[in-house]
Image 1 (tube, one colour):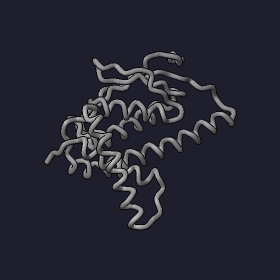
Image 2 (image 1 turned 90 degrees about the vertical axis):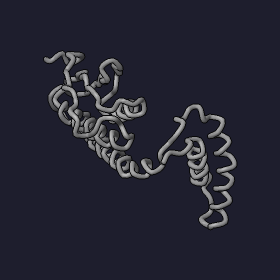
Image 3 (image 1 turned 60 degrees about the horizontal axis):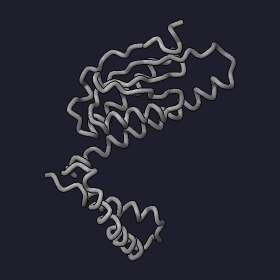
Image 4 (image 1 turned 120 degrees about the vertical axis):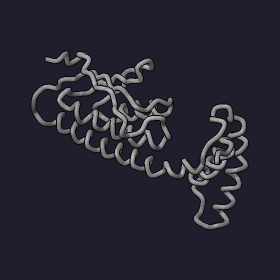
Length: 190
């Protein structure tokens, strides 16, 4: 069952407004703020309806929530680990870093899927998405140390697995991903 998208976004804006405005935890106050949020959110969603897909499947949205939560948890875990790793590298003497640019083919194909993965990579300390090759559906990722490539690629594949299901992509998590290529960028393969 698919429904029009703009009313769903209008209700979501109404719920969001309840949290943003910091309402007292009473039934009357929450209901009043929610109705105010609907009065504001529905017209805004209607005015901007051309930016949304025509139809949305709310049942799939509910089924996707666990995968969205797993995606966020995997991302947060990676951010914490990467922050400790960078702090250790900054404070401990050791071998010099070997930055590198790698080419990572993606299984996600929608704009939202590619953007989510690319932004997640960039938000993770020690990695930056440099470019997207739409002909080959791949991203170029700068990593702080080429000795950590397996960990970086494993994190990207885990995020992709969750995104494929959450976004109802054409491909599935068990589909084969292309080979990651070390481009010979900054590290140059010393």
